[in-house]
Image (cartoon, rainbow, N blue to C red; front, side, top):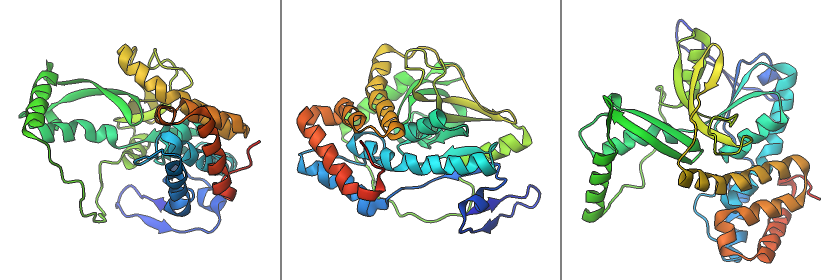
Length: 322
């Protein structure tokens, strides 16, 4: 599907294609939001086989054994996208919304020439939702904040209003609510809307086309942006977007305890990317053995056996691993 946004009248032209190269030809922006294998059979497989080994998961789309195998079946598809893009739209920006965000974005940046940024709304929603739920009398529009780390494990390093640190008030209100007991509405009715949301993609396109700068939280290669995380990791940091593209900002050193937690996630991410790019089954085992949840629950022999069972069950959804 291709979306064409003329600047002056604001109407979208939607056209469907049966040939991917035709859809991509001449594109300036490619938005990726795919789930390879869907819920049935692949996500079910990600849950049911580990459950037989006593390993229970929640969402399993970021890390964990489910995240690892979601990456292994998605990376080859994305590399096919990149191959077509290199032929018919080599200068396009690839805006990735698919999880596992760090592994997929990392594979694109490691193995292709396509300009890629990973986009997630967790950073966008963090402070607004925090200020709304804790209600310390500050609106998100009046606050400033700095968030950095890795996807789904980024840290609110600063949150202020007019230079005043809001963390003490937030902590006090959070403790008060905890003592009162928590409640939350976890299920909401989902209605399809045709109005502009807070999602980054359209704002990125607008900033690149008009030159009006826009700030995002982007998932990018850690080229020294966070100094105590590996340079080959994908980090989530503030980025400026304009006609020059996506320009990440320097964060510096995270508090050691935060960087340490990030590294426990980065280790299996990097090994999973390497497994997908090399086809080596041994690297899948290593990624799973270094995954914090999997290694906390299972022996090394059971991890290896579980990976073999998952590879077999996924069948043609995965390439052949040697």
